[in-house]
Image 1: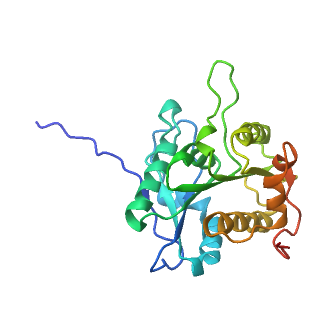
Image 2 (image 1 turned 60 degrees about the horizontal axis):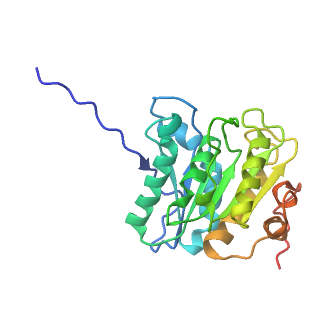
Image 3 (image 1 turned 90 degrees about the vertical axis):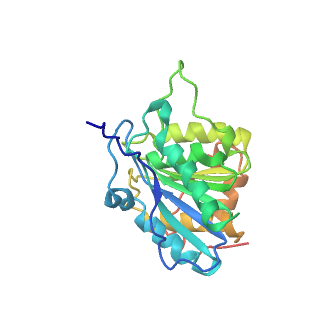
Length: 254
């Protein structure tokens, strides 16, 4: 009897959120959360749930700029140690954007484990910015190498973390941001006080911050004063920038 071959799993891009522009001039890749170790394949519904609101907001904001927004559907739910499968899928997705749309700037926007994937895959030549929301990062271990940051050089990077996040330690994202800032001055980090992992309590402010950053990074729109200040401030000020209640209602731009 002929031996059955196990189908090779492949990552894929979800359908563009909102009306796909006829001429694409920039792209956002939405990277959902995942698990530390898992061989399961995520369902399309599971993959999109954590990034749908962010994606819709960005698609609306960039509709007039030629923005394409796609969620990445991973091969596996798990990061799976040195295999770093979510990061590999993020890099594949950036390749796919270039194949489809040509040489356009790409923002990797991830949540939870997807935020770690975004940070790792930032070295792709098409990527010009990273948005990492509530990033899952491993506990620091003296015997293991630290999370890489050199791939962030030349990219604009924003981390956002709730101070009451019980799943992903906000102190770990601060430490990573501090190391990244030494290599790349275009790194900032906002803290959402009293908010948890899903950043639901101040969701409107978080989405407004994400829009402000992504539209500025991809299309050169003027950044809000708080984001400009956070990027310019030396550590730790620009890495513990509080996200003000009501952010986005009346942005004061220079």
